[in-house]
Image (tube, rainbow, N blue to C red; front, side):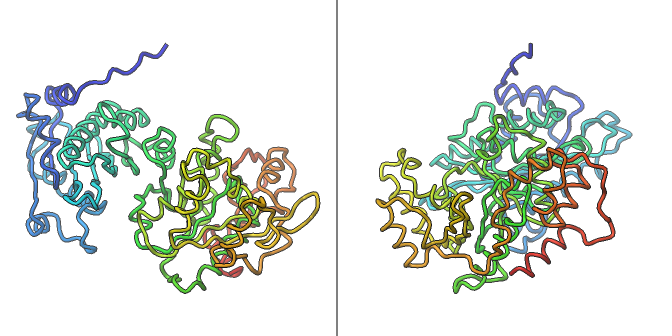
Length: 493
């Protein structure tokens, strides 16, 4: 039976690191005081661990050390990267291996902004550590972003200090178990105090780590409600991806991506680009998968998740994993990062569910409260038609069967063009469903091939995704899937 992990206090963690004669490094902290290194000084025995501590608070002095930030933002990933590069390189330059053959070098850095006096800007920060697992190893690193929820700057400083200690301790003592590193970040902390919404682990210590699975764990473990990763599989912080963008999102299982998914995004994107308040060059398209969707068949299957992610990344798409069962929560999340016009593509069958009052019984204002949040933003819902399999009736904005009690609200939104029909759709793909394609793949027949675009077909076959175990290999001389997907979407648009 596995023993439960003993949670040490920040002082105990700092003391254990200080008493390890082989750990030696630098602490560089900007903003929120020097809250992390303070724990190591107070624990005792720090003289053999702390090579240097620096806090370059003044912007000009900080720029002289680490260089300027092109966008003028100093609490950002680019800043933490520069800080780690500079400080770690200094250790290697100034401390010779001949004199310290067993030392494991590390550089810890953070750049933090706490809540402002008027409480109009919430605190957040970037934290990172570059470290060796042995004196001979190349360095590895962990970088994370945290949002602070406490309504007092002093409390946020204390939370930042605790988080930094947890990160350093986890890096040295749990690096072989990345999921435990994540769990340990909340030792002596809870979600009410902070939200960790991005983490990335790189280097030889994490050679077998898929950072997309770390993103999934953040949502699964309740550390955050939404994470984003880019087509290259790199975890991204939401503000960096969505800041001041026109966001267009499509939710689905994408198990696998089918021709109807591509038609929805292509035709929806073409319509969205024509909107008056949309800059065609400033659109961020997101393929969203909800945690609820991932766990529809019980516990989350990590391989199934990676199969979906592999397809979406291979065709050049940015992926959002969220815990937002309701669309108004998703739009609320987008609104943290942009005030520009947003769009959500959905099928008419989903629209019927959105207008079902049972989903809003937990709200004091019921469905009206949810819709107040949803449509108080600059939002357009782009409605893709749905064909009823029994009656073969086509559901559009005019024919979608909304409950009579809510029909006036629905008609109001349609009349004011908050709900728009997607035009120019391909009627030949309306009968295609992801679950049918998936069943075909698992049966081992070829019916699924006609349900997915050729570039998705190639990705599934090349990587043996979703249980595909055939021996057929596609022609590798063709376009790469991302290029083919972009071309197909552009042509359909």
